[in-house]
Amino acid sequence: MISLLKRFFRSMGYAFKGIKLGIKEERNLRIDMVAMLFVWFHMQFFYFTRAETAIIVLVTFLIPAFELMNTAVERAVHKPDAEHWMPAGDAKDTAAGAVLIMTIGVVVIAGIMFFDIHGLSNVLGYYTENILHPLGLAMYITASYFFITIDNFNKKEK
Image 1 (cartoon, rainbow, N blue to C red):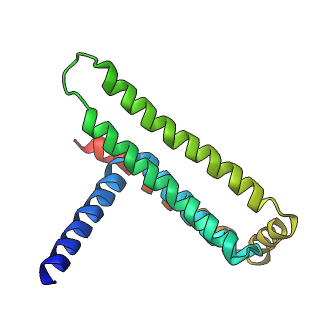
Image 2 (cartoon, rainbow, N blue to C red):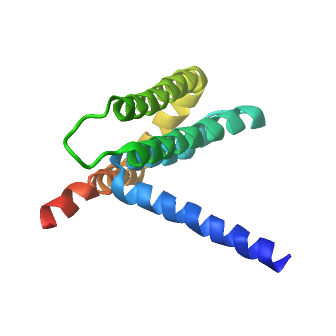
C-alpha cells in the first residue's frame, strides 16, 4: 500500500512538473490560464445552473489540457537537425489543429452561455458602481500582459 501511494505521489510530481514547464515555456498556455481566470470571475454575474457551471469549468480546463498535449507532441517529434521530416511536421500540425478545434468549440459554447442581457448588465453594473472595480480590471490586464509575455523578457536576458 505504501508503495502504491509513493508511486502515485511521484507520478503527481511529474504531472505538476509538466504543468510548470508548460507555464514557463508556452505562451499560449499562459493565455489560456488568464482567460480561464477571467471567465471564472465573471461567471458570478450570470445565473448559471450547476450543470451550466460544470460545463463552463470543464471547457475552460480542456483548452490548457489540449495545449499541454500539443506541447508534448511537439517535443516528442521535434528533430534538432535542419532536415525536415514530414511525419513530424504532420504530427505537430495535427496536434495544433486539435487545439484550434477545441478552442473554436469553447468560444461557441461561451458565446451561447454568456450572451445573456441580464448577465451582461450585471457585469456592466459591477464595473460602473465602484471606481476600484475598473481599476482592479486594469491591474488584472496589466499583470496578465506581463505573465503572458514573460518569456520575451527571459529571452532578452540570455
